[in-house]
Amino acid sequence: MSKKILLKYVFIMFSLIILNTHADKIRDLITIQGTRDNQLIGYGLIAGLNGTGDDTTNIPYTVNTLKNMLAQLGIEFSSEKNIQLKNIAAVMVTAKYPSFIHKGQKIDVFVSSIGNAKSLKGGILLMTPLRSINNQIYAIAQGSITVNEQHYPQNLILSNSDNQYNSGKIIDGAIVEKEMSVNFGNKKIVILQLNNEDFALVQKISDKINNQYPNSSIALNSRTIQLYTPKNNTSQVRMLSNIQNIEIDLPVQDAKVIINTKTGDIVMNREVKINSCAVAHGNISMIINDAKHHRRHFEPVIYESSNHLKEINNRSDYYNENEVKYINQAVNLNNIVHALNSLGIKPVELISILQAMHDVGCLRAKIEVI
Image (tube, rainbow, N blue to C red):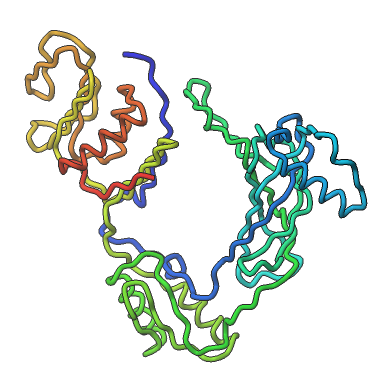
């Protein structure tokens, strides 16, 4: 077998015990209308780079930004000569402005190069105003940048984009200078919004709320609940606090598999089921069969290439010039992916195989590729 390629997988399993339902708190299922984050954006300059900044010959706006910044500090220099600097970079700065935050509190900011800088590692973002959609300044950002650097095993084959040095984060990198107005507590009606539309779940949440606060809740549609509350901040806070802590037995979820084509990550929920099928890809074969057709239970086993007869679970099958993976149908997609991984399947090939399994009805789940 050729050298194995290590794939990175993320498997999120909601439970190791097979159950039809599980309990979550309402706080994890809904958001309260009017208590959302707001987006902030700004244009800034990073200094202190070790020769990895913008090529200012081709990116003139970086130098213009520096000139304007120095002019505000009372420093002027002639622009007749072409200035070539490699220790600065022009960046866009973004942040989320949380609801109910106050002046003086800090928020995280993210920076992304908009020029041709090779790396922002070791750089410092100079004072940058952050604005909202109304063009008003709500925060000021400044600080040292931590780049998006990931550490991989030595035997993993990396592409040029696996480590992104042209973007980064500054923890607590912006100070809030202005507060946004919030109308919370001014009305008797509060709207609860379900994170994912579901008629059964939204009605169940409404019923649970009415059990604790009679006639206070109405389900308007598959995502919205109208809640009648006292017109008072303190009373609303107490009521919403109690409601958020109510536990809900969730109905069976739709089986779903999410595949990230860039990273090779695969995320699935526990509802994903596998039917009997056979997969042939190049010189690799995999068989998923129903255990009830065999005399005894078996675990996944790799059978190396050969020309002689193989006896598998008291059955005789011929496999010529193939590596065979034999898998019990009772296993989940996690086992299938590990089986394919052990046979040297590459990420792109794996995605194609899973999509083909879905198309023929072997993989019973919705597949979302991102």
